[in-house]
Image (tube, rainbow, N blue to C red):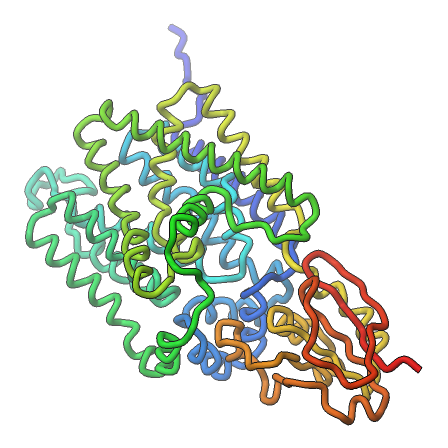
Length: 498
């Protein structure tokens, strides 16, 4: 008798291959983009001693865990790729985590579809390429969500049964793991606390019993309270609550824009090469994501009872975004980067929708997402501020001034030579708001006008700013001497013409 062996890879092997592909995709693009806005703050603080770094972070707007991890990486490696390795690893880990969510809703096919979608979607890819805390916080929130879901599940047999399955083992380890991971998320990003509120609402939907629900609430409250000692140290952060912020008030357009970035990634700045094509690809991404979610909604009724409960759990777990929108009625904070920590469970539902639709349509949607991600990941969309440094450093003299607007100052401070940094200042008519990363500014960084001694000595002002930006009033007789622009940034020189 001939025994036929099934050589088709199982779920675990397929998921590993998809995750490996997503890892290659992310790691290959780590250094493609120049450092962008907010990444310059990360670069500026991790270059300091640990204690000094924590002092600077305490005056900004975030908890310290992400910066500590970045600081550890900076002790052994430097450059954009090194700075982005922590978010990239978190983005890679997110692929199997979202697959686990989708698999619980609708089986292996849904899990693998969610993994593929998460591996190639612009939002998850670009977040993995951003040296900020959002990718790490999102992965930790999804991991905490899965751990809490497992912790509140009821065993089918008494714990004394000698043949009990892993699901029936004592739950203490799961509860401890949930508390630790949820606390790590809150110590990475304060918005993770709002995400945990959404997860708790989802658990209530599962009706896990009063004891489990109370325990989940107490542990979750403890994870949020764990950041209290840091807030005592970083109490100056609380002063920002009464200051102005850059996010626009809640409106239909801001809600639509935030939702669009769920699939499309961040908006493309003006002046970026091929911007129209990139925006068109982003629109296709939004359509693909909406079609996948619509398919999941249609599939809902065909799921078994447990599948419908699991789908509702994923939907409710993204409810932190609704909390964010509600708070924004009082103080605008609805922004895609913050919502990224909360709405990732929706990608699991996209996987359910992809698995339920005709295969050719699903492949077309995934291909569209992959093409858009490849274009957005390889096109230069960040300001190429560092590309102007060689010209400045070759021309600047001791009597000259290197000036920058607040958006470009920290990048020049991080990448410039000591000689350039000694002549570098923010030139602005008023002090920049705190959200420009002013906690990392050295003393006397901001000048409101060009000092008279610069003009007396015949010094030249090298101004680095956004295209179209102009410095505050210059000394009498100063005129534009030259101008060179790169993506998103221009170097303009001013001096006294004979």
